[in-house]
Length: 122
Image (cartoon, rainbow, N blue to C red; front, side, top):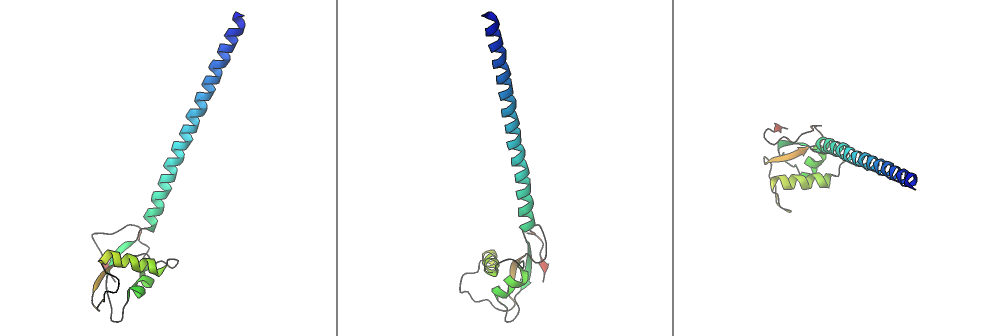
């Protein structure tokens, strides 16, 4: 009987060790996947973040026109116009006058970082 108990004990140890190795491997994969996924998400968000540009509203200019000019080609101009409104504190229905200086997100400029302290002029 003693031989059988020793064999069972050895099998149990081996099974426990194999289980521990599998758990550690699975945990390593989860951590690695999270790190890689977070890195990709940060790259994506950095690439999609526009620079800010200060522009002067020309005569006859509209938020819609600015949204089309500075938005990415695949972007909905309504969303860009809403961002311009938020950036400048413009209320719906508020009248804008020629010569008004506005901050606009410059998706079309291809910039990848949000420039908060220096603005190009357009």
